[in-house]
Image 1: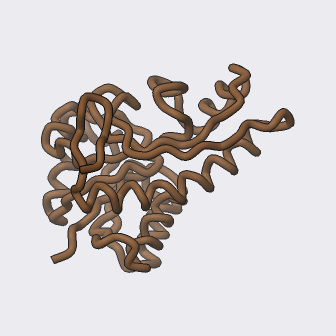
Image 2 (image 1 turned 180 degrees about the vertical axis):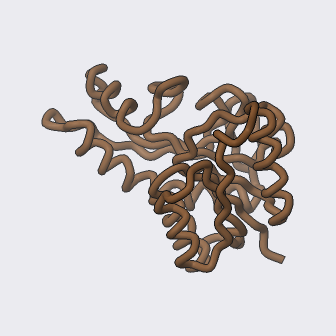
Length: 206
């Protein structure tokens, strides 16, 4: 029986599309069982619909606490028998209960080379603006296991992008996004195959 992936989204879902394509092409031995968004009307939900994937909206504003919101997401993932959770532009912080329930089974993609340019407020264009302000010569993308501390979990994969002198946040974001679409399916395949151990913040092949 194929493993089942649940993808959490908040926006357009280009990384979701990369995972859908990889699944349909047989790149990894898993199917996407559900897409969950905390916002109605985002294009990621349309992507799911176009590929016959169940799409669920769990609006964080309808809950009195982060704990209640998190419990609703956990319940939905269990309903769809999800083994691995992938965050793909999901812009809500979840209760630590989530990461205990899915210990070492939650992945995220971040548009920088963690541990640099991560943490509170570091998402979307904020990341690329910070990279350019810093004078860094390289940026990229990171896939990591998610823990209760944002952007601080063990690193599974990274891809590097050179920063050009003429770069703007938009041009840098475009090239980083191409790397994201490449390394996220590769990281998912690696994790699904299970041939790794987590040693502190290092993920080692075995």
